[in-house]
Structure formats: structure tokens, C-alpha cells
Length: 132
Image (cartoon, rainbow, N blue to C red; front, side):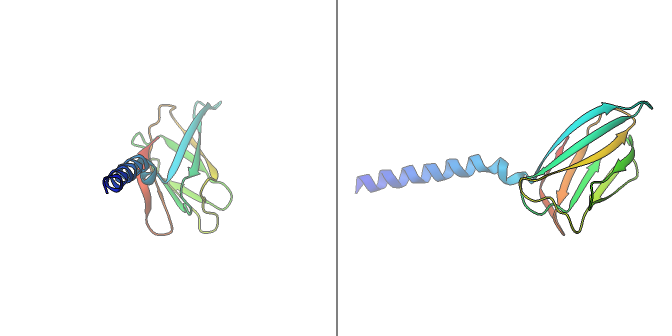
């Protein structure tokens, strides 16, 4: 009887550890990476690679508190708009699925960027927002 109690305690501890370890993964819906290239006109090209950690990312939202975004280029199947501070990229036919990466291009007046980001499914936000 004592052996069963020890096994139950051990299994309970393993389950708690697994839950604690998986929490950060459960909170993330995407991984974003950036690269910055200077342009001849004094602006900067920012490449943002969005890799889905879940299936079905239909919208990317970026917020730039410096309002430095001057132009955007969407990948095929996506539409992007910006007012300089907020950027929205949306698709209805080409979502980013788990393990896939899509690249977005932004022209900015500065290389010192700090974008807040969030991703959305068809109707609601996926995971927790982040800072790039």
C-alpha cells in the first residue's frame, strides 16, 4: 500500500512539473524576428518574420509608439495598412499555420524600433502579446 502512495505522489509531482514547464509555450502563439537594413534614402527596411506556434494566424497587429512606419509591403495573399503608429496585416485566404513563417516588409524612419505585437485568429486574439 505504501508503494502505491509513493507512486501516486511521484506521478502527481511529475504532472505539476509538466504543467509549470508548459505554461510559457501555452502563452505564445507566434515567434517574431526582425532584421534591419539601411536604405539609400536614409530610411530603414525592417523585415519581420512571423512563425506560427499555433495554427490559423489571420491577423498581425504592430504598434509603433515612435510613429516611424512610412511604408509597408504585404506578402502574397495578405493586405497591410498603417497610419504610422499602428499596422494591421490581414488575410482571409493564406493564414500562417503551425511551423510556417511569413515575412512582412516595413520601411521606417529609424532603426531604433520597439514594436508591440499581437496575432489573431479569425475572430479573437491568439496567445499573449509581445514586444519586438
